Image: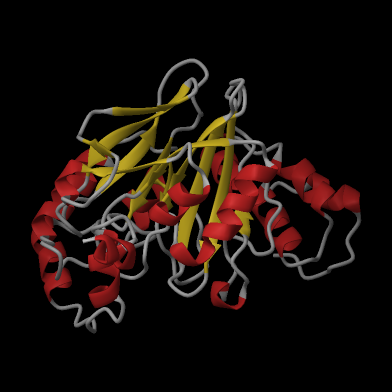
Length: 328
């Protein structure tokens, strides 16, 4: 393990452990250019993880121990999806530790985009970024009806007229577009596949990037609260069911190729991304058998969500509860 922060560029670039190099860049010990040079030599699963965690115009990073101290900002931008026109941004809202994901087809003349799990508090940030990048927002979409923050979909529609709100039909929430399992959400020549992952709530879905020429490789899955890094969402409210969650995550997410990048809706420890392979080995709950998993979930003893009485009613109407009440 390195301890000398002043080692030469040559030594860093020749080291056989690229992950350590990236870690040292993250801590400010070496320059970005050196770390990037080494990361480019990685192969296999290691390359995928370094790609997701390294190529980032980020104020913070994937292993930052205190994301709450960061301002709401762009956190990670992956740039390793060979032969794909995907533009990708991972954004963070500090109060609820929510990740919002912006994806766009920048190879298409209109640069159509989708925004996954937006938060009302960061709508202005999201709108500014979309405009700066010259994108046309097609869908503002949610993985489920959130209980810990108010969605920004309604506000986004008011600021970006091209945008439509989207959510699963099973959620029973209001939206312009309802999707069901197996449907494809197209934006330009790219698409996301809808996979049902109920258990945290009855309406949870996971959005998985497409397969084939021009689609991102490795694949990407936006798991909402169904699967978190080394964990999963709670199952004790909103129609949650531990057995259902266990079965849906294993059949719909952990059955994907092991190099698939998994992006959760939340993280409270500074992680930003994981892979199917990592979670099959290291997830503290979902590596157990079904009975052990159910027992764990039944004994979490978590407090009542502090935002649930505000967030859920608002999110059932696209985050615009007050506006809907005023026009009723």
